[in-house]
Image (tube, rainbow, N blue to C red; front, side):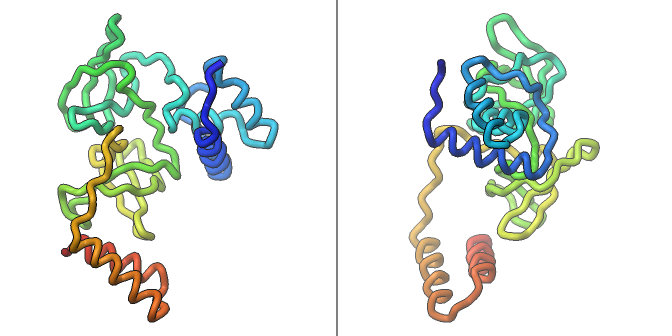
Length: 217
């Protein structure tokens, strides 16, 4: 039987509880691999719905994905290592697939480079909003809503909501470490924290100040 680490189990249980509380309908069939059945059963015993636990495991990419077919909407790995919304236009016998990204380009990937298109509230995604946040920077935010008809995603970051096209969201690149903040930015953060501790400013104001300064520095 495949064993999960304690950290993976804890994360899955916490996320499954969130999904259950939000009453989200999972987008994938409830048919886990046999090696994960004990974890799903244990979750059910403590009151976590089966579908919620399955969705949480899939989001962590520890539960093998379902068999992909032509027409499936997925997140596919791009040349930059991140995963973008795409649809499958061909599945090959060598475990590769031809995908068409929502932006229009085509790419050939392995099936291991596909992720379920699970846009459920609470999921952490990277996004861009050129109109409000400028271009070139990907921000990590929490998904609030996905409008399939309009192909729009609403994200929240530091208490502010942003609605962007599906083309402007992605799953973060794997195996890529966040860049170290430049010295001037680190000094700015330290200054903001120091001011808040001395003057008793609210956390929300401090975070807004930090974000504003980072965007305009």
